[in-house]
Image (cartoon, rainbow, N blue to C red):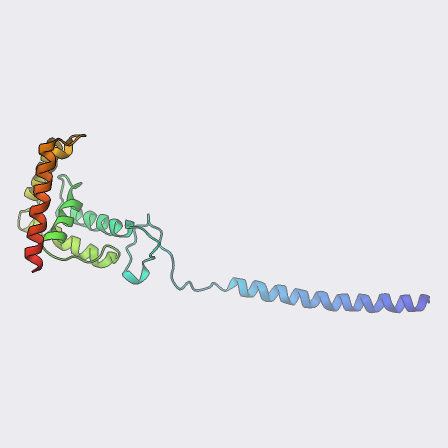
Length: 179
């Protein structure tokens, strides 16, 4: 009986030594596999990054910040290129109005194309000496808006009529354009 226990103990020791060798090999294989860096198909670009993205890199879960980031990059390049030292906080309003009224611009989610459009608009305005007057007009428009009906907390009847007339006028103009 002691002999059976002795044989059983030796067989068990041999098996466990053989199993531990196999485990070490698997661990070595796992570390080799983990050491190989995986190629990321679509790296997620954080919204606060200064890197601009193309439409294929855009994650639909991102907000409009992608376009804002492209606008800021274009504005920074414009200021550096033209050594522009005047007020720049109304640039986005001016560019949006031009994109809406005068010429179509790229979608803000395609930040490369949008950045190119913004750069083109700002450069064109600067070359034609229209940028400063556009900024002054926008400031004047904001001042009038604050003084007018929109600057008040409560609308009076005359303000309401004025707003309704302006809306009707815009709708008529848009219908004429669309026909």
